[in-house]
Image (cartoon, rainbow, N blue to C red; front, side, top):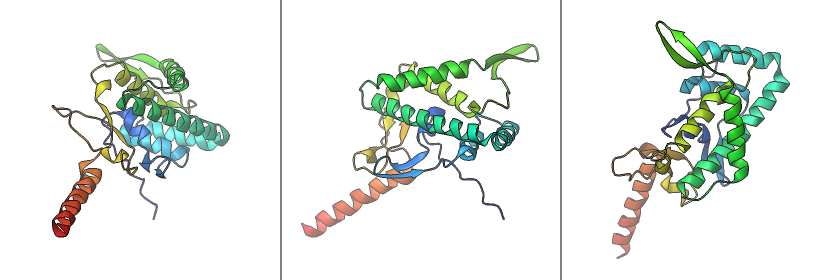
Length: 211
């Protein structure tokens, strides 16, 4: 039997943040890498709708035909991911990102927009991506556009948060807080939120017992 594909957690709320969150745990402390190679990058893009099933198959076939170039494309994707993470972490912490990271994103955005085109759909038009199977960086095009959209949105950029367990060096995931009051603290209530809740309960029980 073949192993089912890893199911990426998409709790970031925006494609660019879900991509930044493809490292689980705490960066620099207990990281859990979810992208081990180019096929994982394509699978992430497929699951998020950044590429469709047919596009994913074409990319994988092209990567098998040009493995060295696929490796370089993957290395570039990881470098971009880390730059995106640092940019959005800086935004969440209300400090400016590094110029180098901003320039990397700007360069990637320019490369992506070169593949944007108008597509006729009946009597209307829509923006689409060209279907060049040789473009091994195609999974990144919607990611960098998503990042640009968030960073230039004003109010949305102000709602970028880092998980509350960042303070205890347990989780470094990013998310957009879409609650009305802007009070969301956890990347996932089912995971980090429940962990923090159980910890508070244990602490209160211990204080009552010791008191």
